Image (cartoon, rainbow, N blue to C red):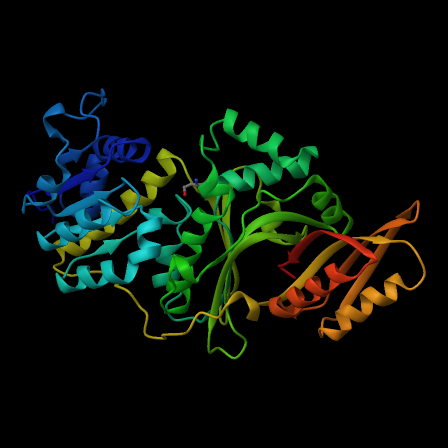
Length: 430
Ligand code: HSE
């Protein structure tokens, strides 16, 4: 039965994503109404620049007073697509206080203050949905929170930043250096004028925090996520990766410890074998690989950014929240019952690819091997290329803790025969 009283929706932000949300709400109005069970009505749009022409939006709905909008009291759903911490956080909690549920695309806020926002939603009996906060259009939050709720997720390995994947893919396919590939990403509109959040891994770290918390039913905040950007990755690293049958990706990796008593979350560039499904994720696409007890391996793939794909995720949440509203219920809230501690990076165990510049003379290899042995790091392969008394030594290790590897590298740097540590890269996905 269709209810005739519409669900009133306010939009906070009308940029690339918000304008697409408004457009789809209008063009797909009949389908949305049929799927929800009531029509949805755009009741107000809060913007910073009211004079900008916004096609398809009634100018009477535009306001610069987002606070007054969320305090109206007759709203059913507030869609927050302004991003950043404030004023988004205050607007969302105010919306709950005044009776609305919230759909948000705000990864930074969810990664920093997800627990408090979930608590506020629960206190007021409202929904907080945020499928669009991680990897744009790709369904991830709902599959992890609902479809896999009966399984035990052990690992989430993802390419969750399109800008950096575009840059790394360019470096891989053309042999370009980082700066050249970044310039192309900027020219094509993939990278922002200030690319720091993407290339230094902040964006991916926020997404890793959200994914880890949901996957492991525990709280993981942005500060818990170890982060390394990808600005130091070189064409030489790609050449080394190729020799190993690998490529390099900026990965968000969330893992449950083998004993199940803790979790880790990290973002850094890593080599992955070309045979791994994530290796074939090209351009600005995102993909997330999930490993769980019962399901085995799953991969979610698609566009991780952009107005339309992100709006698709927002609209999906809008339909779900609308249905809950009509049913007089709410969807799943925060599930953090496992309360697992987040271990520091030193406890992460993985393999490493280390490239050293060394003197090419008798005993150097033995010296280097001794340092690895002294730190309990087992060597898998060694490759040496020498020229004019100098050599490049590439060591690939078996699995070792990050702390042990760190100690090894520190000791290697102190050897007279080691001229420099050219690169250290983790090897994942094996
Ligand atoms: N800047 C992000 C990316 C999209 O390049 O994937 C928004 O999270």
